[in-house]
Length: 126
Image: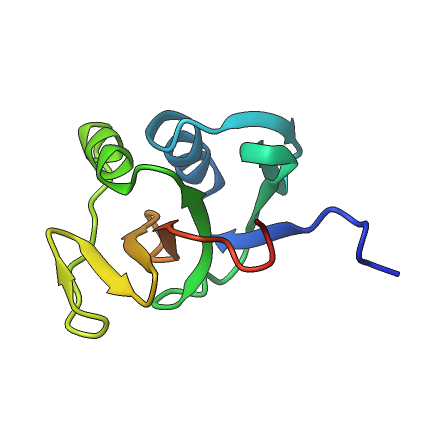
């Protein structure tokens, strides 16, 4: 029943205006809808992220972006002021962890929600 439905992730933030600037200006996502309670951004391949007022899920990865060139993405986002995290588990070197056949890196939005970028084979897609 849901196999053909678009899935949109929703992230809670405390300051909607600050989040809007972060997602638009720093991540470079396009605003597609705005209400007094939430904003929605377009991401790649028809996906979207909805950002609403609420209690953030700080400290846990809430979503990740599948990318082709992780170093380039990290460099570009860092130049826009996005700070990437170093971790012991999984161990990151220069912000990148090897996770099986994939590589990942993580950053936080202004409310502490963790987002990842992932490079590697996408399960189920050939």
